[in-house]
Image (cartoon, rainbow, N blue to C red; front, side, top):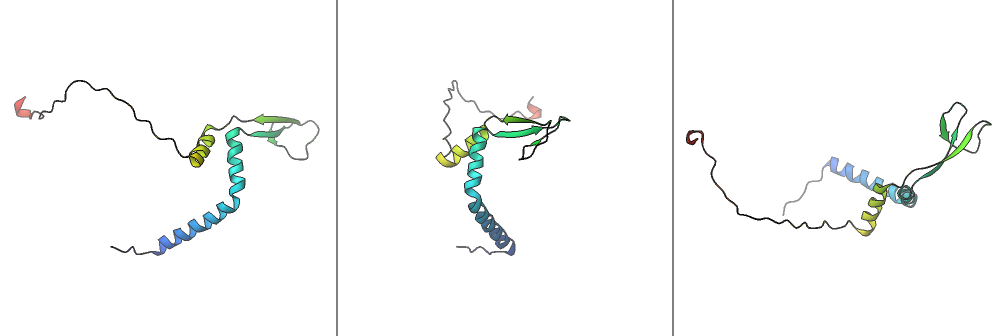
Length: 114
């Protein structure tokens, strides 16, 4: 059995992967909650200023600014990703193909034969 030589680049990638795993695990609950919210559709409160520009609402807004609630449609991609990761991807369905007739194989004619 051949042994794999571990290079410095492989070791660096493995260290980077482990650092990313630690970061993701630490933030996983919030990230999953955000993914679920995206799948359900996002709701945001924004402020439309007197000049017509829009910004996210904060605790302070000035007289003449109007609060609006924006609702983004649910994300099918986020929903599908959550389902695939938690319940497993659905199996591909086999397609029935009806074939009739026979198969004929012949050599391609050479230029002299034509």
